[in-house]
Image 1 (cartoon, rainbow, N blue to C red):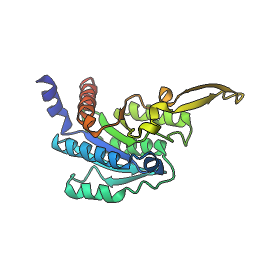
Image 2 (image 1 turned 30 degrees about the horizontal axis):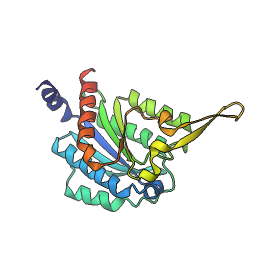
Image 3 (image 1 turned 90 degrees about the horizontal axis):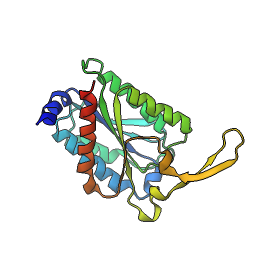
Amino acid sequence: SGINAEYEAVVSTQSTGVALDDSKSMDTAQCTQMSLEAVAVLCGALSKLEIGRLAVCGFGHQPSLVVPFTEPFTAASGSRILQHFSFNDEATDVVSLLNVSRSHFLETAGSNPRGASQLMFIVSDGRGLFVRGVEAVKKAVKEIWDAGILVVFLIIDNNPKDSILDVRTPVFDPATGKLLRIESYMETFPFPYYVVLRDPTELPTTLADALRQWIEMIASQ
């Protein structure tokens, strides 16, 4: 089919990154096992699809590279991922993750004649993202998008008693500090492409949708 031909034409020279939140909030939200399963499914599927390059990193107060773009993804890579994550980091600095990732992606795409259209999955409980402030996160999200990197945020939400969909946040007037309203956290979630994942069996469909958008993004260049 047309999409398969387009897919084959572009993926062998593209890069995909998978970033897993290694912070304590993941353990508190009971997300650790499901998040590791999600990463395993993602990496396994992306390897079978013969994506050009695949990298895996962790992030908390700063990103940590586990599997670089320059290394083939093997069973040993999977073992290293399992050993790396302790879910014990004190912070979730998504700004640092996005900025460092953008640099890595652009380095690997330096010789790519089709540009820097790449794909990145972030696997997290989606909480505590604004440690550097709302505006800093929005700026980092815009910059990575402007660099041609499609970020898909997978929110692991498998605790029905504490769902991210039920989280409410106060909004204050920046000038006066006065409380303006209480709104849903997801109404202001800074990533335009996100999926709330409650069941690992939903991952293949999620991955297929993301790849479809990614291919369309590359084809439109």
